[in-house]
Amino acid sequence: MDVPVWTVDAFADRRFSGNPASVCLLPRDVPAKTLQAVAAEMNHSETAFLLEQGDHWDLRWFTPSVEVALCGHATLASAHVLWESGRLVRDAHAAFHTASGVLTAAQEGDRIALDFPLEPAEPIPEPEGLAQALGAQVLGMGRNRMDLLAELADEAAVASLSPDLARLAAYPVRGTIVTARASTAGVDFVSRFFAPQSGVDEDPVTGSAHCALAPWWSERLGRTAMTGRQLSPRGGVVGVRLSGARVHLLGRCVTVVEGRLLL
Image (cartoon, rainbow, N blue to C red; front, side, top):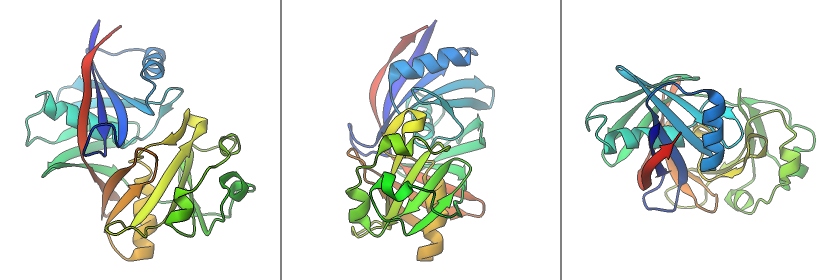
């Protein structure tokens, strides 16, 4: 069967920046092992698979090696594809049924706003060996259902990290968020995300990590609307806005490839 497929740079305002995701529009249900093989072939940090179900879309996300429970940038890319391809009219909301519940997307000017659950990182003692694995002193430590979160001294410490990925891979989590207060004008906090245990050594821009970063920095900065910058080599900007037990993740997308996948 022919499957329409796109590559979209998410949380980006120009091509070849932000986080690339593949988006596949499935004509029917496909076994998970086939979806995993496609994601390995696409070799992006996540590939999104959409299946239309009347008034909503079923959405699943796969890294090159595992299925994940929540992904921001591939959801942003999926909403972008639905509007850009005319499958949704411009003023319609996109509704996705996922392993993390119902997620929605809406257009706000030239950005897309995702409605995601908060995933607060509860304070924990620093895991043994984490500072050595990161190669940096850890000032604050938290964990949610998916990830570890380590706060460092400043933006420079986050930017200069060269962690021991093999040691990070030993922790039983999806990945490790590393963050600090920003020193760059117009940005509130910075981060990086390492997930070697999920087949992604460093993710370029991680929307779902901001479900933990938003409440972490809201508590420290006293604001509910902030701007985060992910300091990967590609880089990207994520706007966050807290709303009760939810967080809005705001960003732009650019389509890079459009084609068809032969299954």
